[in-house]
Image (cartoon, rainbow, N blue to C red; front, side, top):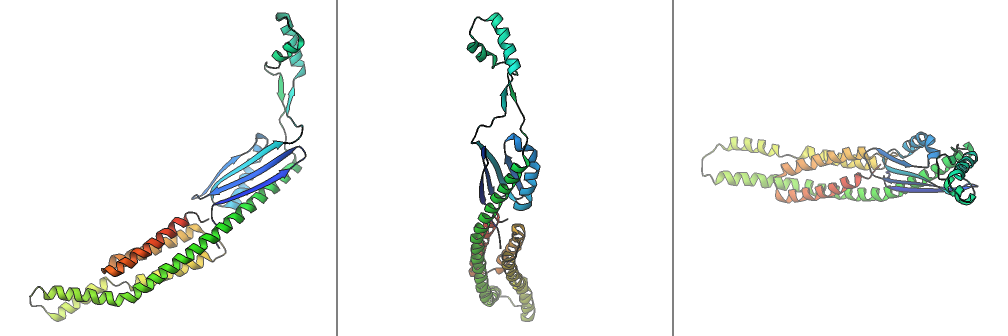
Length: 285
């Protein structure tokens, strides 16, 4: 089972005086890259929120947002009445105007308004934390559904590489015989006398250098291991990435050793399928 790093989760919490919306967006990243946006009142809980997200989301470029919309009379700003009255008294001494105009001027001066720092109500915070967990669950469900699509694509491509490898295995005796015939033809065209026994020994040695038996076996094992890892309980994109690198190493070695055009064409097809796997692995958790 694999999870995509792409996901979206949202939770809406309705409180008596406000509506709180929690949003989570996630894209692929090599590590956890978390960007948190929230009103200042909740900043003291930021470390708690980051730890919660890190524990449950593991990896990805994550945007976390808390939006607050007031739905009732609820303000943290109050008029500093004594200060405003003092400003109006002083203004009367220099300005001949009515009280309304004096009030308009007074409230623009420093300290005319007091902003009372809000404290988080613990009951409210518990409700917000539950809403955050709901958004995380929604995002992880999104990741799981995306992961199922990726998993199907990986399985199809692994099967395709395996089928092409079977063609390589079937073609190998023909390839070896073709290499032998080319060497024999080349030597015979020299029209020089040579020791046939010595030539046969050199021929065997030369052909052994192009033997791909080990590469075929290892590639088959890597394909099986890749499939097993996809079906394991944990999603581990980095592990799958390492396996794909090993697969690429064996495919490249088969290509460099093949010395046979029809086999090299099959190698190109395997490389193409593997490259598509690697591109998709960048988005696996």
